[in-house]
Length: 457
View 1 (cartoon, one colour):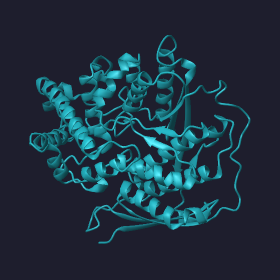
View 2: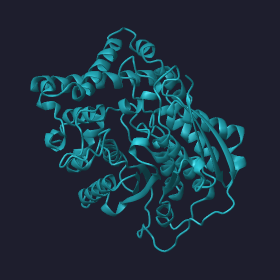
View 3: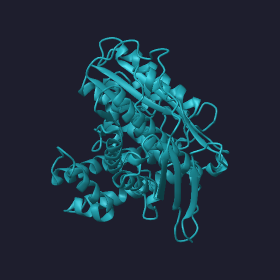
View 4: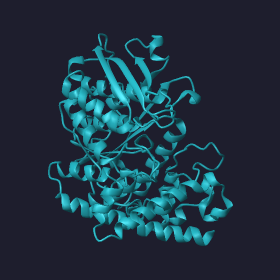
């Protein structure tokens, strides 16, 4: 069986060829925040990434046959400069990025957008206080990593204005993001790394007018590209040349949990390769280079979390969300507690000394209540993570740990090669040693965590 084919035409949103769905985003906040009109190329970038996200979300995978889960997705849409998007260089970069992130085959036809609605709105200013240099722009998802990364980065580079960029698809997540920002400002009001007025929040609600959850592809692998586009656009509006993405190294690499996982099973939204490819594509489209950096590629989640207490943000941890299935819609419990993201979260908070900020009552299932008390589905996340750690540990036990890791996980070799090719990069041998150290720390933290789970059981 060949890959399932989908086609979407966004040139006329009333056209049934689009599947009756369209993408919307409140981009006006990016204008009001800086009292600066959104450049046409930036607006097109957001529109294209929005169309990609829409098509990804509406194209359900089929896991029967030889082309397991792979889709062929074609998009026709208007942009201000179709010749720019249709150039061989841009087309190849776009298709390669999407193929890497989603595992699918993509095709595009760009037409000229004749009527352009003005995106400039000078009715009010979101930032009434001028920005102080240096200006730091970072993605702010509402997750634990974005909070911990902010804390860590603020301790290393205090001062200036910090702009937190959020994309949100539902009110519950938006509410938690706002609660975190409020907690950060409160904690940093007096004598802390950043004054409260130095933290600014740019939230961009977005969504898809679609049929319903039953008709959607749950993976939504390309959603991260929309977040990156929002972040890069915000950095341009703030007149800075760097977007920070705070993600622990284990989560960013997201190695296969077992040998049965295919490429489409692995989320690659913040993988080092994704950030590099997105930076290259966005720069060629925008005509301005914005570096996309993750300072924590070689840092575990627990190591990141240790900065929370020092930055006075330990109490804000309860407002963060890590669950793959959020929101759970279970009264009083926002996270499941058993998916791999929840398990890694609980490991990080235990190993960083923040267990008091991670009450079991916040989860639907508590792995510290004993694995024997959970069903097979609830234990699965812990089990596959244990299997992965065991495999990694076997590689590290060799007298050539990097070589063994590269054989077990071939993608690691390409990741190192591409990182080494970036400007001002460390030597290839140093990068290999840094990844080995990352995995050693992860194994050590996992074993500490797993022993507590075993005692509880």
